[in-house]
Image 1: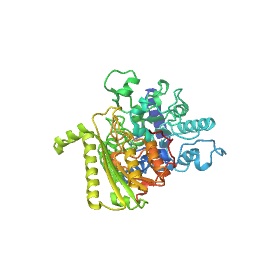
Image 2 (image 1 turned 120 degrees about the vertical axis):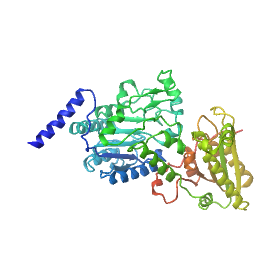
Image 3 (image 1 turned 90 degrees about the horizontal axis):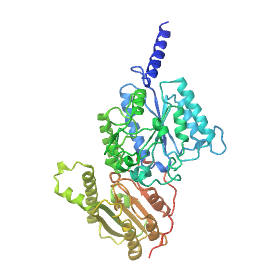
Length: 487
């Protein structure tokens, strides 16, 4: 009788909350078990090691307070086909991963971090909607599926993504006619899609995870809002917070402008956390771990070449460097000053290496500084490193090039690469020169097209520290860019 009364009271509580227009709240001490489904396809890039590190720290904290850990399940891609489909093998069909999390891992809801790229059949989308609907009927106080639609290129572009949408072939939600299939599926399961640099269609606003504030003038312009900032409805986050006893977005979050190590961690939230204080601590640990790497000399020991060109390339705004030099160290707190500080340390590292190892007959050192007057998109020097590579190949006859760079050659924000990859390919391809690239994580990450060029040349990309299993990620396929015509 007592058990029946408890069940009745729980049902009554849920009904009252729903009648009041809100979402049911978990009983105190009872939280749902979260499953994180991580897309590990090449498009995800540096997001994969970040998730792995964050979830590990989160689970250590959960275990310490006697709570069940988050279940992390990795799966490459987002291909979705009906069960038993011949068009998509089972090992590549995310349908099985979703069912495994629900049925075998016994999670209450899935947080899917994915680029959403791959083939998705209409029938499978319909069946997924039915599955989510049935889960919601079984557990009306649990959101069965939340999608964090994110991938490395989109993060690197930041606001540029909304200024110049790249098209459907790159962005699965970027068609001008707008493919609504994923929003349709989520609306059936009352779930959410969390996505940066996108304005949700009016009919799907309830399924969209906006940050607490929008401050981008480009986004505000698209939304026809004249203020400099606007507060957004974050009831989606409140619902998930209550379901899992975790936080999904920070109080002052805005969309990160680009992917530099520090700026990304300061503005964005990728995986759930306990509170602002523990998030700050976690970010500090994860950021430092992602920045770990070998020395320049240790990288060079892995370069396959008899005569190696070492190209150090650093770009910055001159006014930022002048302000940095004139400012006391304890005042260098804004993101641009911290970026210049990180870059200055890398420049010193490069110079110290050159002093220690130059000259050598089998190594040719070259340092390029791209000094720019302003952050205008028109003031760029995208060809600078390609021309430097051409000189190393033509004049020094190197057979391998090691590029150590922050990648900035102009544009609105640090962390965005504007390098002429086709021109780089023209400089090295005919001579059969291998290209190796290292971008220290605090500066950002290597763009996918530059990674593909390095791999196609027979060289490679150095990321993280050798032996760090979190950086064991699927690399993009080797690809030479389209030929360019030069005068």
